[in-house]
Length: 56
Image 1 (cartoon, helix red, strand yellow):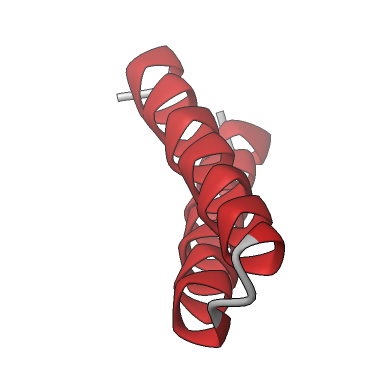
Image 2: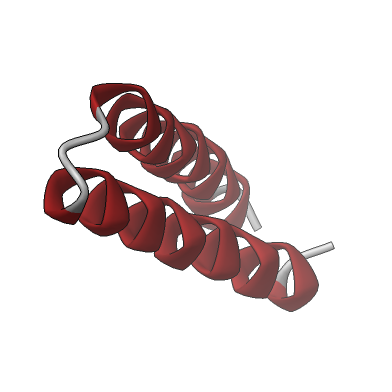
């Protein structure tokens, strides 16, 4: 774990930002909300990684 997880989290966050932006541009509230959810999930995972790193 560690770097691989951080890269996956960053990719998931970027995917969420893209979905959110596409949802805003196309006025699709569902896609925008899904993108926001993806970003939040990635941020929570990243926070968990940061906590693990703090204890190493």
